[in-house]
Length: 606
Ligand SMILES: Nc1ncnc2c1ncn2[C@@H]1O[C@H](COP(=O)(O)OP(=O)(O)OP(=O)(O)O)[C@@H](O)[C@H]1O
View 1 (spheres, helix red, strand yellow):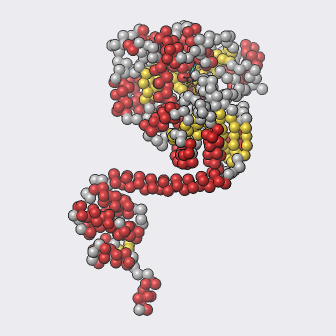
View 2 (tube, protein in one colour; view 1 turned 120 degrees about the vertical axis):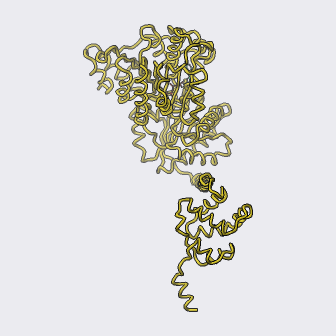
View 3 (cartoon, protein in one colour; view 1 turned 90 degrees about the horizontal axis):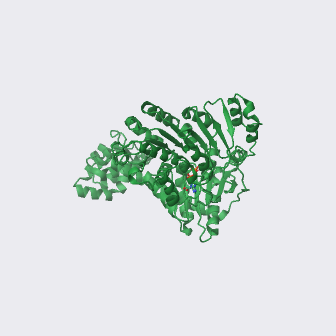
């Protein structure tokens, strides 16, 4: 049976005689690599396997000498990777230069260089016909990436590819991403020397386009890295708005889309942007294993979803104990949400303390500065653990990651492939470990149906000592979070009421009170009287005034200031004694609770 992809190719073919036998042969996956060539009209399709491809960069026609120097001297790449062999000679050849392309190749195989070289070369070609000194440098090429970390990484790699180009002729490559100050970014990108190749995350790019689309009128090339992610529902609105804004000001001449995962659905959506004439290159066959064979993968099952953590700690300890000097243990632990990242990071930090290794969290709950700092620390520490959400699941290239742990099912099988792909990059080896609950067996089955092979599969047996240890740390975490939350709320309230005439201290006092309800509010006032006394003496306020402010503060904090708190007789007595208030003064601020029947009875009996 031909696969659905082959079927679509067949349907598009007017003359099935041209290719049917060959297409079916290819669909059976007997050839590890192939190229599908979409010629001028989509209805006529030719499939062909190319002969020997050049392995060295200097064998590629029309490649700028300075780029070659950057590759050999600075990046020190000796030969092209497979995807580079497929794409570079084609996109730089005289006849096919500027063609749009959709490219699928496994994770960690050098796709960034494969799309950046044609982009840089095209920009250098444009420079040849322009007086750069006279032109205000506005983007000629746009590279869009789904995450900030990846956008920074692409721009760094692109700058390395340009490092040997003389400064006067060198394309300016800059990145714009969310989570950093807009004003400073705008100055850096659009003012200081301008920009030729702009790497951007979708949201931030759209901000700039909405503000001043005219800045983008020179854009001729558009690249989507992690194209399937950009074209999926999560980014659909932003990507389509970006496209329509750009269409109003410029004509995109070349569109490049790259990813390790390109499903059939993606091909259909991608074609809306790629137009009629494009080349689709896959360096893997449909029957090929989608993850790297250099990454053995295992799966551990636990009984319940909440049991995920114990095997993770046990495995991490085992690997850390076994790590040999000179063979660093660098692991990423992938979790589903930012909240889980915080939780697991806290627990791992305490449970792996004895190993004295850096353990960093990374998720969208952190500021961009903290994200960049943590990723940098992970990169530069030979032995370290990164506890991560999917913000680093795709594209992020950290040398020598030895292990990828995935806790629970990923957002989809494609996401599993990208996460595993953080290890075993550029020909290195690595290991993938998936921890699933028995209820998540369907996820395991869908991975297996995609030819993903698991060399090891077993059911985890709980270790009571470790389970107790985890419980203790979890309790500590709960306390820590409660304190932190309380502190955070107090800080926010202080900020909010800083303008209140009695300043921060009263606001804090009032804020403290909101943690107690009704009668407890008053008890808190009394129990903390010492604290207020210092406020009183400093501000020379009477107890009465401070009490009024506190009650007013309660009003400011969202409670109705006209509704007086109810207090019992005992509290009312305390108020009178400790704060030296009269009955009238107390009733000005509080309603004394009506006597209970029991009290009444006691009184009558007396
Ligand atoms: N020709 C080459 N020779 C040696 N190393 C290379 C070559 N090309 C790229 N690399 C290196 O390989 C690593 C992986 O490259 P890159 O990040 O581009 O992979 P990718 O295919 O985009 O992966 P992903 O699908 O995860 O985004 C990088 O460290 C890169 O510098």
